[in-house]
Image (cartoon, rainbow, N blue to C red; front, side):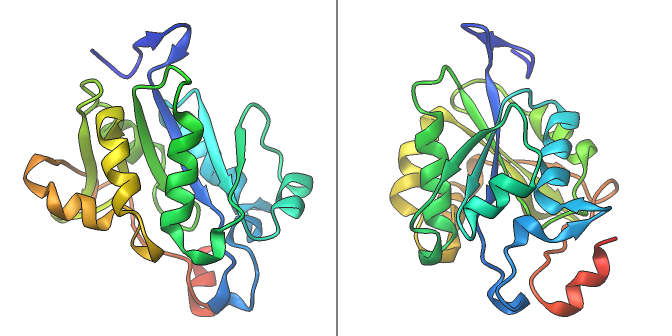
Length: 204
C-alpha cells in the first residue's frame, strides 16, 4: 500500500495540522496568524501538507478561531474548533483525531503550525512510511524524533488516552518507541519552533 491508496474516494492518509496555540510567549498572538511570506502562517503549513502529498487536511483551531477563519484562506480544509485549547496541545490532538474518525481515513500525518522550517520534502518522506492502520512513523533530525508524525488509525485511541497538557503524543510515542519507523529528514528540513519573540526572525 502507498500514500495514494484511497478508501471510498478519500485519501487514506489525512494531514492533521495543530494550529490552536495562543502564543503566550509571543504576547498572546495566535501562532496561526503570525505573518509568513505575506500571509498567515497557517496557510503556509496547510500548503506544506498538501504539497507533501496530503489531499485531505484537517486544521485544529483554538485561540481567536473566528479571526483565523476570517483572515486565513483555507479552502477545502476541515476546520475543527477546540474550545479547550488553553489546556494544551493534547486537547487539540484529541479533537483532531476525533474529527477524522468515521471519515474513511486510515492514518493521520500530524504537524505543528509553528514549524515553518519543515517543508513538503519531509512530509513526503514520512508519508512514504505509510503501511496501513498499524503505521507508526516519525520524522527524525540527526536521529532525534520530531514532526511530522504518522499515526495509523489503530493507534488513535491509545494516543487520545495519553494526550494531556502540552505533551501531545509524547507519552504514547515513548511507550511505543521500538515500533516507530524513524525517517531521517535532517537534510531537507529544520525542526525549530516559533515560541518566543526571538524566534520570529525565522519568519519572512
